[in-house]
Image 1 (spheres, chains in turn cyan, brown):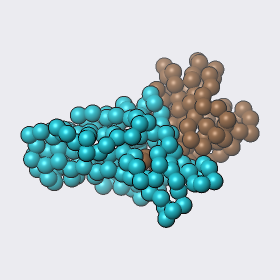
Image 2 (spheres, rainbow over the protein chains, first blue to last red):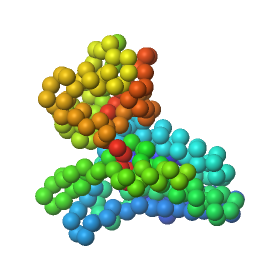
Image 3 (cartoon, rainbow over the protein chains, first blue to last red):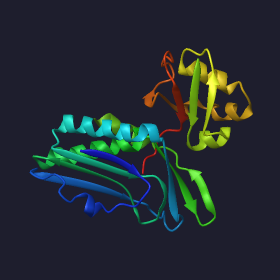
Length: 144
Length: 83
């Protein structure tokens, strides 16, 4: 059970070594930086150091209680991240698959609308606009 | 009351500072915003549309009517977009 925020790259496969031992189901989601049809070369992620890891740990603890998880992990990067690289991942472990899937989905909805991360597009011309929050992401929280 | 006020993403850019120490008598986040917005054009621009601003008091996400009694750090930022 851990939440981690880091600037260095991570290996999603390595994160899963030993994860969820004894569970019946492990679900993982990895987010990659999209090129947006070749327009972007990277994303820049800003965070709020004093708040971010604490917020992620709170989301993980809430998911564990709600879905009866036996293990969970959240890894999120900040700084400049090149197109194609993993930017974040969540992993959930539970006795049964439905809880593991639902908990991963729940964590993603919270990460997208309540975790203190902001992203900006980097094109060949340099830093571009901050990405606006999507109403869909906020609405998705209403499902829970 | 002395508060550390932090800004992130485009609020930081609009104001031109990542953080500042503020002496204030504001009792809520909303009152603090009104004080800050009255300071200069940069602060006014950052707080022009409060539907696009979120706030945290001592690293906990809160709403604009949250009290500031005992607070040490207030942060302002746009809605989060995650990775």
